[in-house]
Image (tube, rainbow, N blue to C red):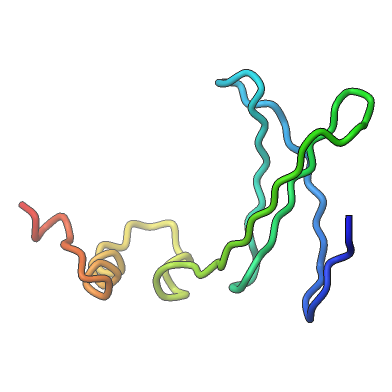
Amino acid sequence: MSAPSGPCTNVVRLTAEPTLSQAGVYETTYVPRDTGGYQAEAIVTDSTGMEVGRAEFRVDFRPCGPPDEFRSLKTQPGVARNIASERGLKSSRQVR
């Protein structure tokens, strides 16, 4: 595996765990702390440690809505309406 390159080369190693709902499916979770581009590479090994598969993907993480959206766990219908309006969506009150 080649070393990451570029201005931001932080590497986080995660281990996937088998899901409870599907045999042969593994999952892990990573929650980005910063807005920006992320690259992930999954390497699959067999029981002897031999690589049997590899996949890579990239994603641009941009949290939706204004930064204040996640400051409170209270219901904030005004924030939801603003986000819907900014994206040209209808709020539940407009649909009824």
